[in-house]
Length: 283
Image (tube, rainbow, N blue to C red; front, side):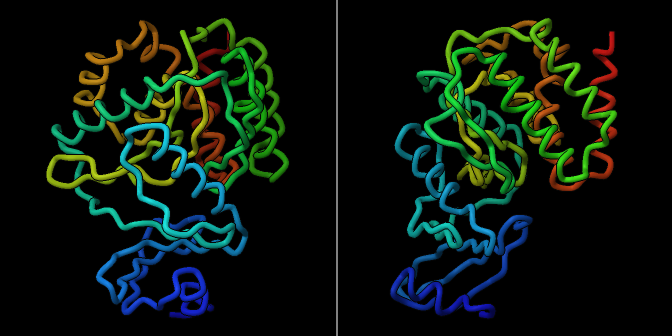
């Protein structure tokens, strides 16, 4: 291992792995698979910029407050997170989509005291503010749309005119959204790379960005990059009926948030996607 990995792992676990394999998908952190002498297989993430303590806390919260399968945390510090390894990486076939729908629907059945969370969390390594708020629409407007648009603008990734359009739309977003019956716990970052499956079953969900929300924002994200298809939504709807107007109107509005996250992280063509959605509501 390089870059101080052996010393850091030994200090955390009291032993050095016998084999280390680099894993893909670590756009925020360096991710490795660790094979230990006692037969355990672990996953370690290192981030010199920090932020991993928040991820570990979110995984622990999901493990303690829901039945969602997540990797058990073995060590947690701001620059190092070590978790149990979960098998997976297979395709989300119809059986896996059904299983995912059952797990996500159960997660959304966990009720919270208000929108937001007990503390701020992260998404893709970016700060995600979660002040406790009584109104979902107000929370989404201020702490999702506007907060991420301003962060993207400050980083030089979101043009001034497009930032202004987001701000103008946010001012009238209550025309299109509805207050849910109650705040629900969500995973917060459900794209395909964060859903592990094997042999038609879900083995785990990783890299959460949790908070209490309208679960429709989670469902919307599940469509943005083709993570879930009709099999998922048909099964989810059997368990938790999806309100009319979601696919026609609210899905695109909610996807503005993850798109703005991607603008902040990567810029590029994601700005065009934000603009196209806003065009639908420029009336």
